[in-house]
Image 1: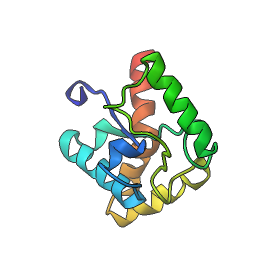
Image 2 (image 1 turned 45 degrees about the horizontal axis):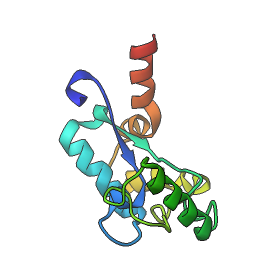
Image 3 (image 1 turned 60 degrees about the horizontal axis):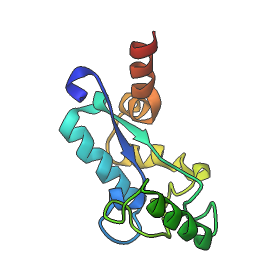
Image 4 (image 1 turned 120 degrees about the vertical axis):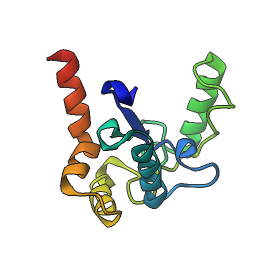
Length: 132
């Protein structure tokens, strides 16, 4: 996909970032690093996937009820999605803390131009190419 100018979105959904436990921002940036190594800086962008069922947005009991509903409907499978609570990467766990990612990427050696691409520039490029 990246070879044709497409993107891979670096999601924050905990089971996609770490195998067990709650991820940190450092874990998430390593996830981004891996994707950049695979497809280059122009093929990666943040896809936070913040959603109403995550910890910090709704109580864990409601998240568990949502999970059961998604499993029962067939929208999700237990093999693909772990049971809540879903604690997003510490340091960028909620939309109001997302800004911390910029500093984290800088500490990992990404340039300002690369950070712009990861944080949305690549999405804008692809949308412009698709929609004109």
